[in-house]
Length: 224
Image 1: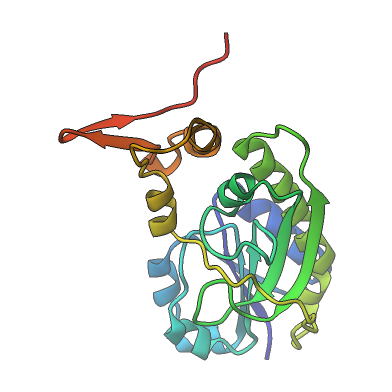
Image 2: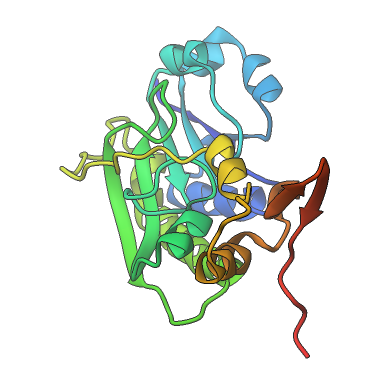
């Protein structure tokens, strides 16, 4: 019997998302977890009665947990289907695309690869920063959760998937690190582009030039 939702989210989101789910189904048990270790501590009986809902989490759910869940697992990804994987806002701004968004999808063993359930897209405002774009994506992700919350809390059947493909490139920490490795012959426009997007020292990585065994890290200039 479906009577448990395992909510994999951060401390700030868990109380709000839990209240929304319980508002649709007061008899539901919402188990809030934050880490992979929290998931592996759950019993087989709990997993068989549960569905997993992940919201903006860096945790990768083990395939063994996905296989034991009785009512599926769903992820809310802060990027559009064209940008699966890591740091989608950075790569979208670097690519200078005009549209971004948020995605809800079924979780499978591969990251950001399961059938897509819903998408919320929006135009990228001119000259927006990485943090600004992430904020917009977060707002659209919250809208997606609100839109799907009743189904997630009450319907043992998964929502129907939509025929939307994921992008062909899976973005990763390795790709992020590689784009921060600046060649000595880089053009000024390309250097400016990389510093604008990747110069915030997010994730402890910034554009870096290596010269005579010494690393020089570039950062965005502070506003005058």
